[in-house]
Image 1 (cartoon, protein in one colour):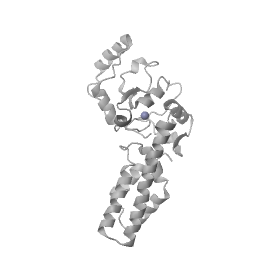
Image 2 (cartoon, rainbow, N blue to C red):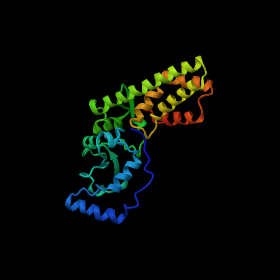
Image 3 (cartoon, rainbow, N blue to C red):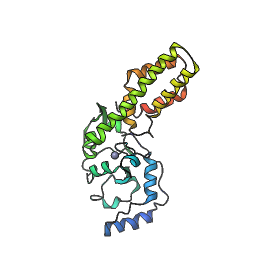
Image 4 (cartoon, rainbow, N blue to C red):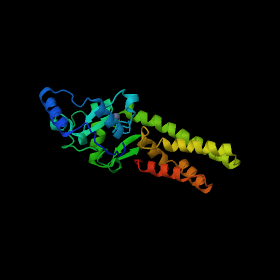
Length: 245
Ligand SMILES: [Zn+2]
């Protein structure tokens, strides 16, 4: 989970639309939030990922669900309140279900910095406090198959990229051939891009990257060799913010 920004409101979600459609929900129970433009807006602010588990919504669950942070059973007046709508995968939405976030607060990644409440250890998300524990339990963030195994798989992929980068660095140091330099730069760029906010499981990847000694060595050596430019440093710093260390 990473911090997300709710940086706009869909223009079609006007106050009168919200009032009339919320009344439709109250009287008929119709899923008035199931609208393409609303879902598109949520996908945009969620960077095309589930706001809780960071899976690729389109790939793993086939479609996005509109998650009501304050659930529609306890808080029916908020079914179309933009601030209350989050992009979620089917599985996280199903796990959270009617969990009452007012009685038992959890992290809303649009409002709270997840790193304040959650940390990462051995591919599991760990609590830092009660809000963190509530979040893990309500969203089922440590489900072995859909969450922990997936993080492990992605983490292994990243470790392999770092291993390859280290090998390429050694080859370049043996002989400063341009082709060797380019191969090194490419793999480092690829590694850093896996750890940016628009990549799936970016909190997992960032945490692994910034706790990896080989990565630190690669960065230090590349700085010495004047191969670590401002683009790399920027990507490095951006991913560091996502790390759940
Ligand atoms: Zn999810």
